[in-house]
Length: 382
Image (tube, rainbow, N blue to C red; front, side, top):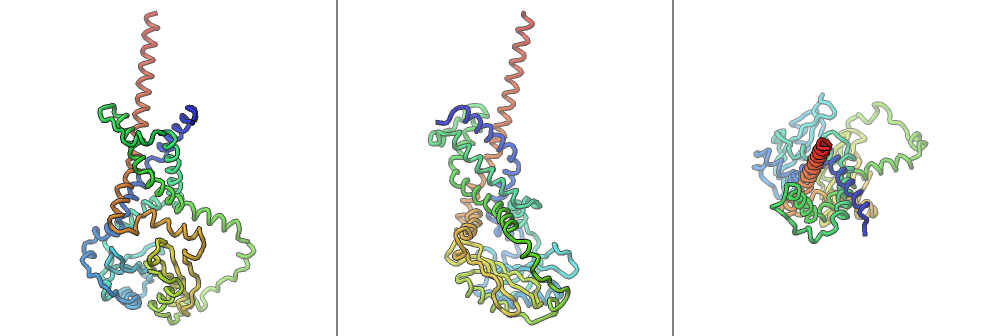
């Protein structure tokens, strides 16, 4: 049995953790609920793209790349996104000659012919994802910390409100504002408890795991090994044009290296040079993991790095499951709507918790003023 003193401390921790993180928690949870429809939002914001034909046999990657080079001569093609269940088109991120390194143009291409349609007018869905994952400009560990804070709020809330089954169906509409909001706060938290734990745990993992991984590598990597790496020659053959392997042949090589790979993105690095690389990143057929990747030397067609979460160890497999579980993008439109409605409850909890705290604070102020007035009246009478 938890003592009253411990309960009071946990209640204080629960209240202040919610107040301190309330605004950011609301932003992250609200944007996260909406961003499950990222691809649908992008199509809604670009009606012309939704009208493009969907091809049962999309144009080859070589055709897409050739069309991009024809339309944007001298530009650097950095990434090609393949058509999926929602988007019927190819997309490419192109950095034109003379543009800053962080300035890219998102271009749409027809999936049947690979013909360039033109730049995408709106990237609203991507902006919402940036807001949810990075708060636009912040490091991802901030959102990971909010996931940890959410787990703390869940744990303290469970201990504080021990009569879960009774509070699950308790709603006293005729009482004061604070009582009504408190009942709504508790019932919303209990009904969505399993989902909240899932979202908080996966969000904390994706935000903080890279930070710990980088710290571990920094500690365990010998500075001598770093110093012994040969420096790349300035200029040299890295800038000389050399023949590239076919993108489609490279994709076939990637699928041989990772059976069942369904590439979602193709990234091109230093294309046209002797050090060119191509990375194929995507899902695994009939598997939930979404972090499969194969990096291939584009000039020789030899794989350089292969990452198959099914064979890379337990923690790699866990990491590969985090993003699908967090964003709910593996079960179709019905699952997205479920994630949307359940994802709105943490945003409501952050608002209702803040309102409850403010109302309680105002109530304590009124009680203190009333007590002071009563004390003053007694002193005057005496």
